Length: 223
Image (cartoon, rainbow, N blue to C red; front, top):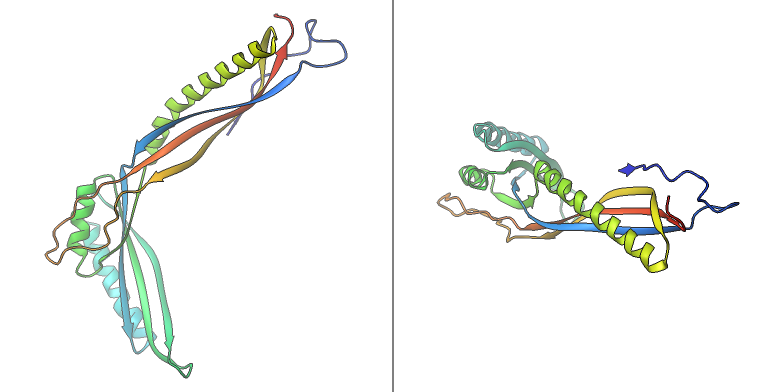
């Protein structure tokens, strides 16, 4: 996102025949945020003699799990990848067919997601876990980080102005961006116990960064 800022207009204080010297600066603010969202991937794999048999069996399982999963209002349910493919023998001919289907469970309530996954594990066991920061929480923290980054940019601009012996500065432009998050992953659960007991889930942390790049005019005299 680019935030244009009006630069100082040419005036009596500006050197004749030229512009004020310019300098480019960068400042950022970072914070570690606990991951509050989990996405559990449930997967089912089927093998049979024909493509139609695999597709029918896989679709039946997916529909059954999807119907049961939708009963929990605390967990968002969505379809994942679906793929059916042939298996070849040593002669290069199709020997049988295999299929794999996925369903995603996403929630900020780790206990509810874990319990639901346990309930469905006899038909579709867990194949993967992903933790993240929800958009609402990320936006709230980025708003606070923006204030810190702007303050840091101003301090750096003033420090540079003083170090070079100029009288003051004015902002020419500013570019605002969020840096990529750094992940501290928690241990991933890849299966459920045979008695379908729910397993405690714990997310890691992400380092969220707001970065500001911009340029300033260095003034030789104060307005």
